[in-house]
Each structure stands twice: as C-alpha cells, then as structure tokens.
Length: 333
Length: 293
Image 1: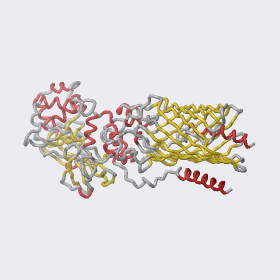
Image 2: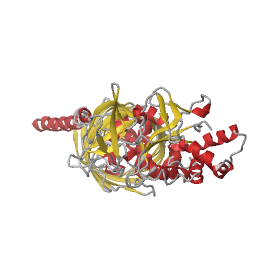
Image 3: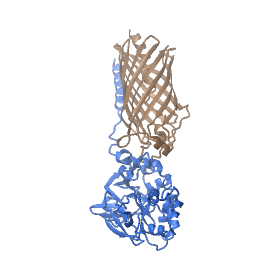
C-alpha cells in the first residue's frame, strides 16, 4: 500500500512536470530589444522599407550586430511608407528599381555606430555605409538629413538606432553627367529615364562643364524627365519619338534651355531652398514656389507661369544636387 | 466493461498522433496483432508570427500562409507491450504574396511535397492496476527523416518551407492514468536531437480526456522548448536559414473520435498556438478516417 502511494506521487509528479513545462513562458524574451530589421518588419509604416530590405538583401545584415563597428551598432534613417510613396514606390512597385541601385540606396540610409538624436547637429555630416556623406540641415524647428525631414529620433534597437525620415535619400556616387547617364542606361530604373536630357547635354556640348574634376564647382540641377521633353516637343509642334529628335532644335537654343536648369550655388537640397528667384547659369531667373511638404515648384521665365514639379528631389551627386522635374524650364528665348 | 472501454481507448487515442505539433506518439498501447490506419486531412492558417520580442501582424513577404496536409498514419501491436508507429505527411504550404513581390524576389507562393517519415517504437515498461484505474509507464523512441526532396534552405522563400529538412532522433517517457469511468490523463516528456543545425528541443504534452462506448474526446496542451543555441528570426545570428531558428510553442487543442463500426470510424479536431517564438500563430483543424483491425 505504501508503494502504491509512492507510485501515485511519481505519477502525479510526471503529469505535473509535463503540464507545467507545457507552457513556455514569454517573460524570457519580451523584454529584449528588437533588431533594426525586426522594427521594420513589425511596424506597419515601414512595410515598404521591409520589402526593400528583403529585395535589396539587407534584411539579414540589419538583423545582426555591425561587424564594422566596435559598438556593433548601426544607425538607420528609416523612410516611412509615405516617403517611398512620393517616388511611386511600394512593395509592388519596387521592381522598377535595379537591385544594385536599391541595395546602394538602402546602404545610403545606414551608418556605423549609434548616432543619437541629440548629437545630430545642423551643419554636421555623417558618413553612410555607402561611404558617401549625408548633411544635416536645420530649417525652422526641423532637422533634415539632406532633403529628408527627421520625423522621429532614437528608436532603440538591439543592434543600433533608428531615426524616421519623410523622404528616401538618393545618392548616385557619381557626378551629374554620370548620374544622368546611369538613369539613361537603365542602371537606376529598369527602364531608361533622362534619355532626352543626356542626349541634349551631349548635343549642346555641356557634358564637360557638368563633369566633376579637381576644384570644379558644384551645382543645383533641375533635370527634366523624358516626358517633359516630349511635352516640350509637342508644344513646339514637333514630334519627339527618340532622344535624337532633340537635334531638330538649334544647338544654341538647346544650350540656352539647358543652362536655364543649372544654378551655380554649390548644390542645394530642397531643405535649403526657399521661395523666390534664383539666377540660372543662362542668366535668366527661375522662380521657386513655396516650400511645401518637402518640395518646391520651379518656373522658368518662358514657361508662361506653368510650374514644374519635383518628381525625384534631392539626388546627391559628387558635384551637386539634382532634382528631377516634370517640365522643361524655358528661358526667355 | 473495463476491458471493452480500454480497448476503445486504445483504439481512439491514436487520433492525436498524426496532426502537426502534437506528439508523434500517444499514451496508449495496441494489443498484439491489432492496429489501425488513419488517413487524415488537415488545414491551418496564420497571418501573425511570434517573433522576439513581439508578435507581428502580417507574415513577411507572404502576408498570410495556409498549410494543408494529407497524412498517412499507422500503428500496430507487435506484442501487447511493443508497438510500432509510422507516419508520413504530404504537405502543401501556400503564401499570399503579390505577383509583383514574387517576381521582384524570385519567390513562389507554394511549396509542397512529401515531408518526413516518422517511425517510432513504443514499449510499455510497467503497468499498475488499482481498484478502479490503471497506470501505464511507456517509453518511446523514434526517428524522423526527410523522404521528399523539399528544401529548407531557400532564404526567405523558406518562410513557407514544408519542413526543416532535418533528421531527428527522439525519445519520450509517457505516463497514462486511466479510470474505469472513462476519464483518463496522459503526460509525456521527450527530447529531440536534431540535425541540419536545428536546435535540439524538449517536448512535452499533457492530455485529459474521456472515452465512452460511442465517442471519445480529449483536450491537450503541447509544448516545445528549443535549445537556446538557436537564433531568433531577424535577431543576432540570423542568416535567413530558418532551420537554425529557436522555435518554442505552446499549442492547445481538442481531438474527437466516433466509431461507426468496430473497424471504421472518423476523427476530427482543432488546435491553435497560444504562445510561441519564431513561428506562425496558426490555428488549424483536421478530419480523418480510421480503420482498425
């Protein structure tokens, strides 16, 4: 009888142990910090960033400690879904970007070490994982990194820090001419863009002036899309079907028009531009509209008051900042 | 009466064994020469994932995942105290990523195939008979090994992999307490040694049930605790290789069985994960036909 009780206790013990161990406890990890990749995945406002990190092959990188920094940390400036949407990008349209460009663009948002929000100073710079510097700019109450407004700072991750920004930052790592050629050669988008512009620059023999060299100046450049040139052709009663059709116009005219898109002001991001007039290299004024939601309109003297909008603002090149616009800026011809 | 009930119990209690995330072995023995074969269909879905530290809404890349399977399960009594258990599932795992996302990543929405063959030997070590009840101590050991040609090493595509592509060696200690009234309780503890960098795991299950002459029902809680050598998805050490992740879970469910004749019956059940680590928060159900001999 004693043995029987003993066995009953043994049995009860087995059942109790299996019952108790049948409930894994969450408390063991609910206090842990998520990785940067986890923050992107678990936040609905970063779903495009998540998709970009997956497609660009950096989701694994941002899950882990940074092997290139003693602290093991990364700092990531994370564009929201709205930031991607400005460029027409969401998880279903990311395929318009070349993978290498997507990866480089993501790396441009990453830097080594923890960069705390309170150590970000206007006028300072931060070197990205793409080895290119980003600039910090103060405008009113806001702080910008390049043309992107910092919306929130210091989201702490297990492997670094996340700051939230309202625009995707783009850097080509090349000069203005090579940047345009990268777009024209479909090395940025899978479809060519700026093909008319590149053709026009070559035709007008302005390539050398816009190519970076030792001590050469930096510019702000407004770069009209292919559709902008096609629209211009139509307005002039011409039909532009290929970039070479630009050559239907006199070379001097094309030169004058192109010079109306370049400002010799060291290259300015949208965050550094204000409403008013600026003088283009051609000598005519360009009128900038109000700084609204991170962009400005631009109008040439010959545009009859019709404004150009920035489709892709704030592209950083090695000799200036390029803003891609949807209308050719006409001077007084 | 007691004998008849125990036979029914032995017949019925196989039903829990072939559904995903329940123990591959139950706490009951077949008599010598007796056995059963079960063909079942199960389906489970999830759109949330248990990550560390938080549960997330929306499966990365695939949004939501639906897993259906057809399982063939067999158990036979070599002797009253020695049973052999076999199980092999065919699994179809289906994601819901958009065509654009699939194309951009070179992924597909479906992974399917024959998964792992599971073979177990069960031995009843000891039985204690009490006035109105009995207590069995059972030991079980088995191997699970991939027999399909599926892959678990396709990067993030393997979010919807049908298995870990790993051979595992497993052992369980089981105690089953049966009362003549029809109520029973069975508990088990096991350990699983796993290949392909899958962390070893402690497995446990506790089940309470009732078996009358014309029906059977049980409720269970099943648990897995993986070795902390495993990595967390999107955590330190994560390389996109999912088998190496540390998967813990607690799953609860119910199983039922109804015999039409001495040899033919049907079984059904439902179950859900109530907590976990590095796995989908799935809820599923199954139904099957049982042939006993």
